[in-house]
Figure 1 (cartoon, rainbow, N blue to C red):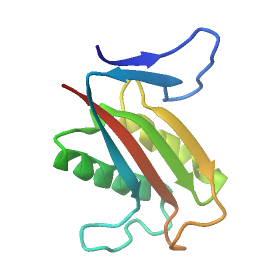
Figure 2 (cartoon, rainbow, N blue to C red):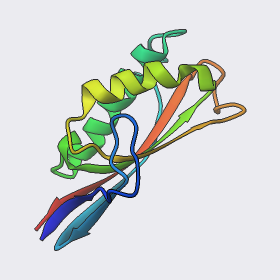
Figure 3 (cartoon, rainbow, N blue to C red):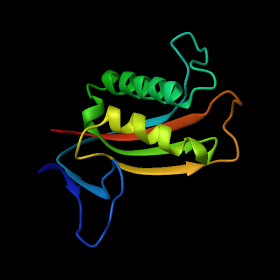
Length: 130
């Protein structure tokens, strides 16, 4: 079967995400929370949540590539934002990054991330069919 986006008519989804996914006959890849560091471990796009989000997705893509996967294989993301007011900018980059059917997504505002310069951290789950 592979993967199938779940979109029951009784559940409304506003934005670029799917309510759920069903997967079988493949492998799952779990990507730890990625942060806005470049390959040298420097914070990028200080003060620019959209720029930081782009770097985070770039880092997620690099981890996935190591497993032979791409962002197209992502079925779930969890977004941790340092401020709820970043929501729209993060969502815009998410919409630029993924195409329909979109990954399932949870976004939460947290009191703080580990480094005060980080504005966003994102973890991902990907599925690659056999």
